[in-house]
Image (tube, rainbow, N blue to C red; front, side):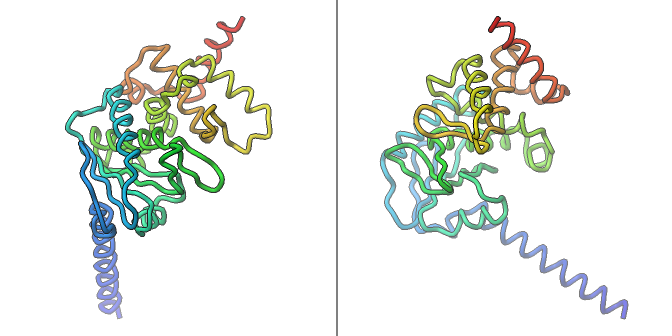
Amino acid sequence: MKKQIRKWSLRITAVFIVIVLLLAGILLNPSTLYANKVIYKNYTIYYHTASINPILLQQLDTVTGNLKKSELYKQDHHIDICLNDGSIYPLLVQSLQGAAFGWGFYDKVVLAGNAHYNNNFVELRGYKWNLTQLLTHEAVHCLQFSRWGLLKSNPVAGIPAWKWEGYPEYIARTGAEQQNLQTNITRLQSVLQTDNNGWINFADGTGTSISYYKNWLLIMYCMDVKKWTYESVLKDTSAAQVIEAEMMAWYQQRNQ
């Protein structure tokens, strides 16, 4: 009986390993689930049923400009852009990662929702996220992975969300109304006094979740006011509540 149990345990383990390897192979090779691809500068764009909107190429140029602001940027870094236009690849990623506007992992940026390239937003469940800023955000996750590798990146490393998600937002949020920390804090305080449904909007009609917004402001404070590098942010052991208290004291002093 024990031999039979051991035998079945080994078989189940072997099957599990094969499934994991197959999933990893598919995730790292989007071409297996897409009909078409095109290479544009440092990007390979995977698409399925429709031709690529040329505006997307302009948006990727903007993304590259945004990424150059990051200390993690590497000129030769290549990123795969996986569109949500009929391939089951985004659905596979969603089944593993959960619902989102998009995902960034390894060297892959995967779009979900309904992309409106001409109007520069992705729509998901009635909410809109700026497309160029979303692409930048997810691309920064690729840069994080490239710098620190699997074991020192989230979700494996367990880095606090404000540090891991706030930095991509800091690099991505380049709108004219998004550059001033005092203005951003004032906007947050105003929205928190309303029935906001956990969402905050910008002038272009797109928005972000309040949790992501808060993460971004903490990073903005650390980097623009305290003049830290992102590497310094990661090494610092201060809790988010401590940084937030510092930030709000700084804000109140300037509003006196």
